[in-house]
Image (cartoon, rainbow, N blue to C red; front, side):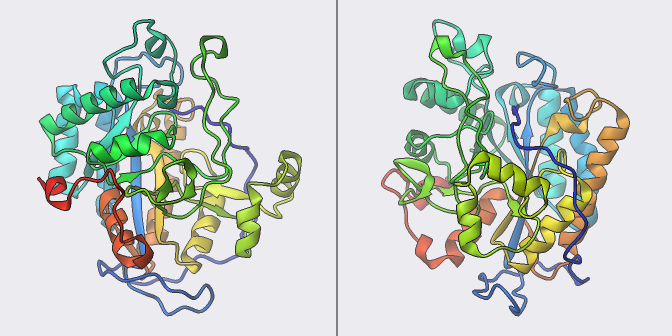
Length: 388
């Protein structure tokens, strides 16, 4: 479930043509240091599709028990198979405890090389607080005490491990993660998180009411837009954590100097609105359920020209079902989502830079390719224990 506060604007005219055709490769390689005329490095851009696999239309009723939308992953599988893409399904407790949903996920694993990760909705995952605040309201994980968060995560991880192997990738419900969660995730064997959505401020989006000690959503305006090791004191800063943060990909309407991109999150909100509406600087997130087709194509063109280390496309399983979300109320809206996703995958499949993979494999590739990231945080388990 998300409560999206991102600015909504119309698309713009294309300013950069889409990348030229070329064979998709399964090769590996490091990132090019050049931002301009770099020689294509096969496998330099890892492409992942991360799917919050959760109950039906949690936007309108966060306590909804139905998981019929998971069947739509079969349609998604057919689309992914055409270009060799892979799904990373981040599953909630209700999904992983539903036998029919588990069968669908098993089929994806056996035929599409998918990955099953964890997606923590506090209201779905026991143990619940004595006050029931984490059930009565669409609570953010960061609104829980650290001990309750640890126990909920442990229960979800064990439930996934009973049906699949223990998960190594994670996304907090409602795009929620704070620095104190990092050591808990590492102790539980997680290698990668993908809860951060750069350039977004969700503080005004309420989970637990403020008079019940809620604090609203996360502020990711200053978070890096590229993969990074977070700081144990600040999730939006690079630091010494062993876990890898792979944010949802965000690009701009045109190529910008690095210092401009890094400063954008610090711009006052009125200035950001002026820049977006005038299409001078307009951020576009890799969300085929929300962005326009031209906007997504433009964002990918820029990302490929800059050889982004990882392109992380994100969506919800419920958005693929008619009536499953506010963005997919009718069949035409669902078809539009699939059409935009298909267009994105086609562009990426045509680039010799790209390799489709799963989230954990992409993070491992980045760790290996990025010499400065060859480290383990103090809370990391040994490589041997992680592989068991």
